[in-house]
Length: 128
Length: 115
Image (tube, rainbow over all chains, first blue to last red; front, side, top):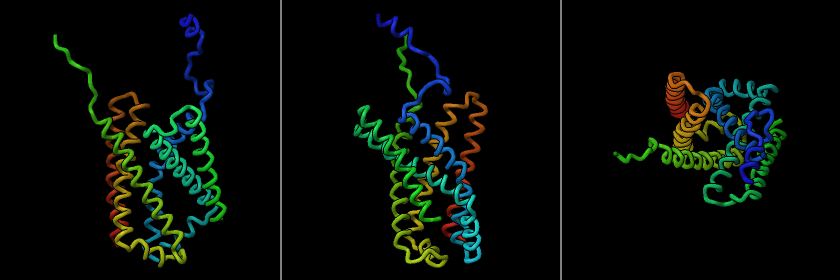
């Protein structure tokens, strides 16, 4: 009986076909945001450098970050940072067996997803 | 007949733990910088530079960067392990990432202490 059930289950990992649960979406976003932050490290280090080097370089820093496109891009990176951070904190709780039940884990993944976006928007509104 | 158990390279648990310790270090530093930004009287060059002239902030930032570089190494290596099947290619990418991370570390020290 169980074998016939198993046989009829769909077996595919086509990303266009499978429906990722929200926790799975938060998980892949954790990976993607981590990779993007790694790739953008030189840019962030450079921004930090020009911001504290000299009054002239600080002026350069301000002109770069006040460019609307750059601002949008950096807010995107901030979103990545916040998502990665919050998803990481969720991981730490799961490691301690806190909130590991399906319903709680699903709810906390929604909390991570939403609060990262809300925090980014809040910072964005304040900086704009 | 030799009864040999198949075991891993044993760096899994160490890196699992390191990933969490470095994460907590970065979390604390993030909150510290947030607090500093909120208490900074004015965001101009002099206040901002004075903040990073504090020994506390310099050493906290150094600890943050060390944690970040190790954390990034474990994360990026895991991504390569999952998606790059060719050993030669994977090894090459490992070397590139290690060299990049070491130079970022040197760069960070230069930013914090250099002139």
